[in-house]
Image (cartoon, rainbow, N blue to C red; front, side, top):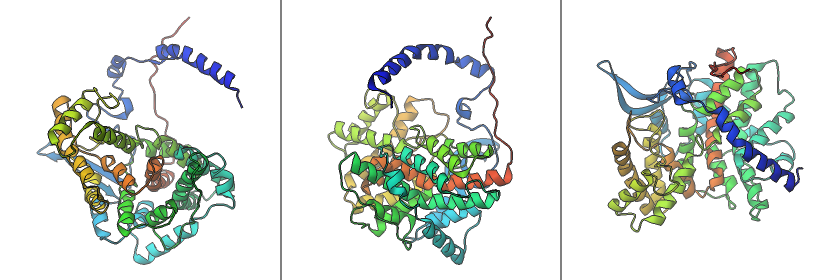
Length: 448
């Protein structure tokens, strides 16, 4: 273990050398334009550079109108089914996480008998190796639950006697199903360990119950009294379903496919995806929304005064206040134009939960910002496509109403998205069989 003196000396050296790195690692915008290289693999209009083909999901944000590419209300499709219809078909009392996980993994909708078998398999998988919680999760508790989970995922490889079985497809499928099943345990137990050792709070570890859905088990394991309402579980289930997969072009899913293409194992591929998702530009958006909303509440007198709200949003947009970055978080999306279909579906459930929790004033504030922010942004910035709220605008609000601590927000995202990662890993293994190796053009200057 480094001494404090050595650590400070190293940090001082790194800070001194930073300027050299900045000087030698900067590449001018002009060179990117000259060689037609799109930063972030996206062009000026936000369209992604084509890097593969998939049958797992599809995003629609534009339509062809008389030969002209025109922005349209967003659509998200899973394996040929519109997500809005998948949520609608669950009904008011049904849970969709397990059914949709089957759909994404296997490419077709399960019969009731197939779904029952799949749920039973998942229930049987909700167990960790003997003493794993004590020896791994509780050993080095941390506020960074994503790091805790990633460490647990990599450690689980040591407990898998067939980690690199020659039966690659079936073995990877087995590993994916096991990880999907235990992700809620890794997240919740990781939080409880942190909350006990770092916050000096009570420790309790509830085992999952086989007859409960993923959403129900998550709430049950998180809460000291194990209690939750049907509405709470339903809203969380919808949130998980809407975050399971998103077109394949997002950073963490692409990471899954890149690592899978190298021949690496399931645990390493999913751990790499976790490392991608935890980045604030990817999985942490809802936390920024929550921080912004708290700042707005602290700086306006009346949440029902739209003129006051609009004036303060204008200050945020101009970089005068909040984090001074000039962003209204939760507004706009890299892909969608007129609307995010996930937000459209989710909002009605958010309103139901807000009503049940007595959070009408907060809901009014969210609705007002949803109405005012796009107009302000469109008037201030050059917009190539529409601006509308995305699903992260409301997800943090929902998690807060459910009593889920902020340390778990990105982990909840991972609990859902591992289904999409798993589906893409399987598709990469079966359909591609070629390492992903992109090209970088060198603009290095040769020296004597």
